[in-house]
Image 1 (cartoon, rainbow, N blue to C red):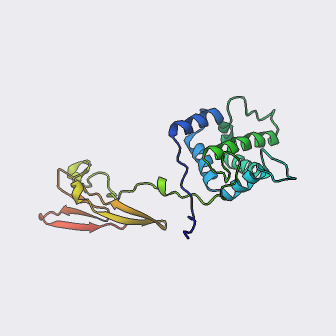
Image 2 (cartoon, one colour):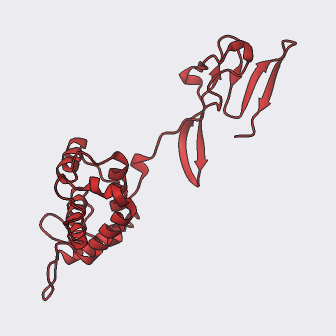
Image 3 (cartoon, rainbow, N blue to C red):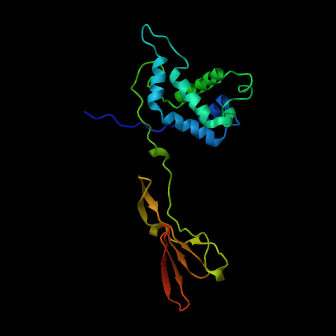
Amino acid sequence: VTAAPQTQPFPNLPFKVFSTFVEQTFGSNISLATMLLLLFTMTENPELLSLHARQQHPAEGENKTVASGWICSLSRTIMHQLKDDIKTVFRPGEYQSKQNHQDNKDLKLSIKLDAFAKLLNLTPYDHQGKFKERLRPVSYTAIQAVHAICPDSITCVDQQCASRALLQTTRPRDVPLVTLIEDNISYEDVPILTGKCMQCGAMYYADHECFQDNYGSWTKCYLNST
């Protein structure tokens, strides 16, 4: 017997499908920050989306609800957080602050979020309305950022070099790969890159700098920022 996975993959759909949905549903004026807020609000609330989807698939004696109290509550929270930026979530003509009642805005946004959840396949039901399994927490491994450890300085600090740029001169085969732990998250195969001033020959590392003193000897200077 194989145990069920504790997470589900991050939604993976063609960007063209995603962008077309965004433009047709939210409009072309929505910002990247707001769109990411909506996306991660979806992926961070599997329990709420499961409860919402259940009311859209009623058992005998129950009523089907297009916009459940669950998704409406989420809509109100989003509207509260976005404040004036909430206008960009609606297409031209959909948002009219003086004419539209608050509940009407909640309903419109709830319908958008419902469609968004279905696009991302964040529903425990298949296309025939049959229950598959409850939603699990979404894994972010597929979109984990790629990190590189670099020198803190962006130019040579030697006054005689007049802030020359630092070049990355390490050959690809010689670049070390390490495990980086940041904010309790582990990142594998992170490259450590070294900078070099081509005028004075000073080397710049993530944890120290190596330069020649007045006597021609090479000196290491370890940094407190690492």
